Image (tube, rainbow, N blue to C red):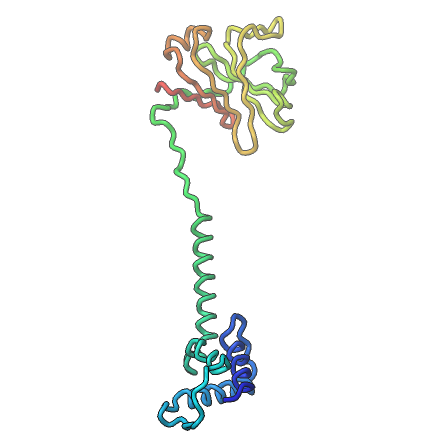
Length: 243
């Protein structure tokens, strides 16, 4: 093969096996590549003892196309060339599936459900006290106040209309010592515990049994006991962490 043919062969090989192969869309170039590869293999297969003998003394070999051809790796077979685009496509599909699987796996986060302490127990259900009469709670209108049965010296009542920063449509639950209610002076003479609803969550009040709580509560529950009052429609459910 002459130098021009070898140069053409190198260009066609680059189009077939290079980083951006495009020869598969050019049938004429593909046929030319196969023709030149066949010629190159035929030249390379000629035994040394069949080569023409010259009377001229041997000369130093000059670098040229033939030497450059020997430096190139053996070309893939024709069958392998046909499979190359499919193998490349299959590798992309495999990478895509693995990436999607990894993304899906990392997106799933499992959270253990919150378990309520087994020691927490419901200790009372307070119904509405029809005779309830108490001072206004933080400016709440009288018509919006509903009182519930006394619970060992504590009274729960409702209040509406933005108490303690709650929204105008929210309902707040207020718990006070029953003895602190002074209807004549329209005041409360003691601590006031308030909790308001938020969306689907009901109004809830939590407090601790301390030395300044009513005697009835201190007799029933040891100091440090936590009590929770939950407004449930027209009743208040009371829970304790001391059973």
